[in-house]
Image 1 (cartoon, rainbow, N blue to C red):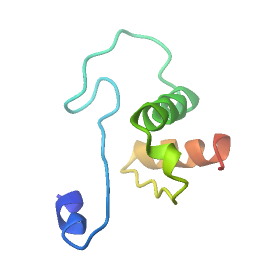
Image 2 (cartoon, rainbow, N blue to C red):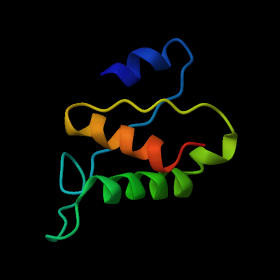
Image 3 (cartoon, rainbow, N blue to C red):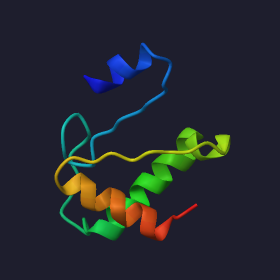
Amino acid sequence: MVSIKIKKIGIRSCSYDRAGFGWSDNVPIGNHDVYNAASKLHELLQKSGELDHGQLIILVGHGEGGLFAQTYTYFYPN
């Protein structure tokens, strides 16, 4: 896993599975558009304290996650 390799060189990272995917909980059918995904990511980063450090955050997404990362940076540019 990439996060293990970059930790060895002193870079902090975090990863997550979107609702209903991977290790996350199942979610009811509802609004799962790109804005909702970006909003949930922002909420996650706020609650985890990641936005409190004032440091650069690099988002990396695979497949549809790339679109969500772009949407996030559009709606939350700072």
